[in-house]
Image (tube, rainbow, N blue to C red; front, side):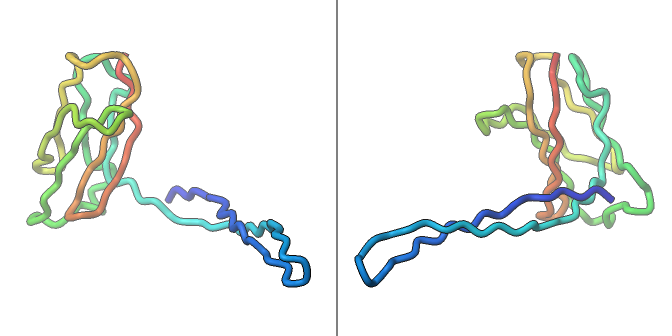
Length: 119
């Protein structure tokens, strides 16, 4: 299981009632969240076809699950989409400009994201 950590920075504005001055104080705390990756994307980087396949068959979504993979550019513009059937799919990236893209896989409203490089 992969983990990522983010630092949450709280910025507090403090009013000093004696002289109506303002001050800033900061507090930080470490927050962790787990991410589960159901699908493997390969080859990455790619110049032609991306393969999408289930990483672990024991984590297979239900047969009635609707699984959709959508590729976005870094501006959030949708570039391609495919429905994942029987836990596999292919996505053609040959017509895309070289660069970094985000592949979002929606499994019954649960999102999984992958960074994709097209070369």
